[in-house]
Length: 288
Image (cartoon, rainbow, N blue to C red; front, top):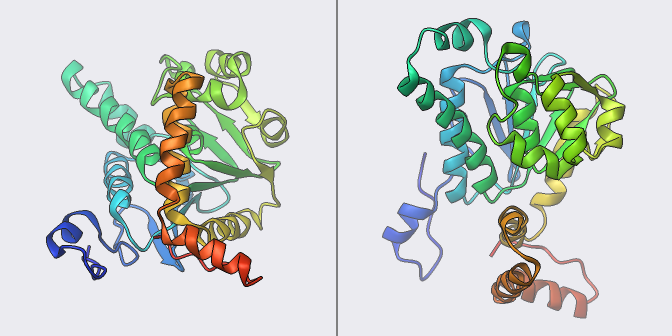
């Protein structure tokens, strides 16, 4: 990870510790490509429907944490290879070893998986998930933790934890899923572990829209490009407030938004938008 050139007037030591370039990141346990401010993460174990391992969990957690400081990534697309999104934790490389562990090591694992969701919610870049085929267990959680979800009619999303003898309260599911699709619908999925089809997911509000299987990744990338072309600092504030306001009363939220919006009014992008409007041009945002 290289350090980006600091803007004029910014102390190099401050920039070195808080701003970095990630477009050239070399992923080890999944695919990574970044172009034009849009990063594309592809879970790439298609022969087994792209399951997660201890290694990929940890690398994804660390990467999303690093994205908090990235200056060259404005939006992220998350997809799977081979016509499936993610089948969850690898049965042989995760589930098998877990049954041999004691409580301290099990808690280490569950905290690591939860930290991945925290990192996804904390990074300022909006995350667009492109979901086709199997989206199960931890894969369903990754979809849930994304900001936007494009699916296909053949997508099958299953929070199947109770089918393996576990509670549905995994990686924030009991907190986040009801806010996306409603308490009753979330309860049904978490108590039964059944699959939610693509059309059902669209009707329930889990998916923003459905796409053809051959087009879902391209449409997710296009949506990410549209977001990346916007005022990225302001988009990061929007994501932060969407997450933080879950724990606020209405009056507290209104005050927090007043403070957040006042900060955004200090940005050069706000000035650029005004000047472009006056000149009857389209603004070109630069994220500052």
